[in-house]
Image (cartoon, rainbow, N blue to C red; front, top):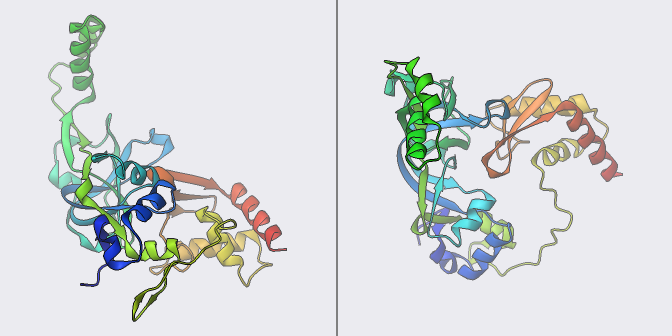
Length: 305
């Protein structure tokens, strides 16, 4: 069989001693994430922040024929539902993203902020690590037009207050501006994939020249799952007495490097002297203050004693 990394779910028994049931049980237990093969046009690099109400800030637009990582929740849903519509996806193979172009070139007359998109921020360089993206970017009616349309529907059913909106909208007569919006990415059952490397890791399978060996029993009772704590522990390994600020600066330097040795999964999206911004579960961007980081360092050192 051709050597690959991503396989269809039904191929699990062809490349491992496991069954499809074993694979799906690990997904249901939250131990394994699924992937999905997509072929999309007009996707856009994106991130979101609490300050923007989790509306999306868009980078550049691109086309993509590769796999995306499903979150734990979406992996569990995908194992039971015939299809998923995802507002945001994690691009697993950035080298397969092609035809990069500016949002302003594709949509020269659209507003760069509105009900759906917080802002547009062109990329200074193309990503080389996994990154979040939204499905096809489109033009939608302005927020006012959208609100009036919905209120017309509600008013026709006797539930709206169209009169007030009509008065408000008259102040914007002639406004024809459009705003940016996004289309969810559809994932069907046939699109689902598993990562052979991750399956081997989760099930404790060893690969030799003769193939995959039998399953090992793995003790996971003391396994750390918080990504920032994992990074702290990596720095402390062999450097148990190093101070908190040094650990912070080591992780920051690693984040700025082309090849990362501490943040192996490229989860940190931004880092300065006061806070870390990183990708958490459910495709959200989380922020950690230095004070919290310092508490984590103290706990990590105590656990080593």
